Length: 326
Ligand code: HPA
Ligand code: ZN
Image: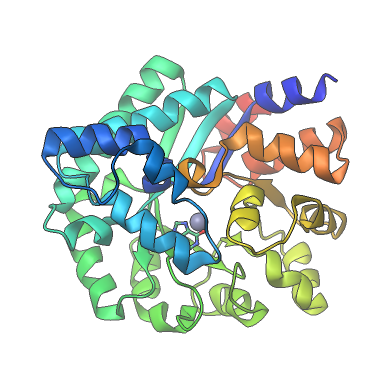
């Protein structure tokens, strides 16, 4: 009975959250109105009703259209601040937050507008909520390597405002090998490296993310279970997986939350973390992801402390900060 309270209050980090995926329908309409952007839905309730997805692509289409209302620094700040406030209320002490600059720069929004709004929100989150936040720039993998290099170029004047790079968007048909050179350049720049792999894509994409991109964490990674040798490697090398149970349910990666492989991954000795991915679209923030998985899979307080501990260990926060949270 005390478990839901523990899950919502224990100190933990969130390592897999797309800030554009935290944009709630109400805020989409509010920002659309002030920016005089027209939306193909009558109101926020009609928009939320459209959130019925069959796979990753069916979600991405509506996720990119939701992000199209973001034009001004304040829009990015308001979006991120709303997320930080909710996360802090659920025991999140630290978040490493993905953002998708190409979704905005391709609409003519300057990179500076995006990063300035996000940076201001992170500064406020630290002072108001005691939540430390870092940003991870994600390249959209359905776009070209050349476009990724151009985005990196635009980002370099703001090198100190983000700690790493990631790879997201449509996985199938866009293997990590496509971005081997741009990730090599990012590593030379001292950036951390993560990548989405093994959400819809095969275990070979997880191996490629490790071997070619030198990913330090794998985002999702649930399909590793199809390859026992890969599971053994991930366990041996303690490669963290940022698992997102409600995302996997809503995007039909699993048919039922009770069929989610979270417990199998834990039992295999992997450094598993629980995360929300795109909470405004998938029906729950971090505590809901913990609570629904724990209820469906029969996990206990021991698992809770293990997962919170993993989330701290797997973060890129400085060791002294980690010690305060453990
Ligand atoms: N997978 C790939 N791209 C994404 C996701 C995801 O779960 N969420 C936002 N962009
Ligand atoms: Zn994701």
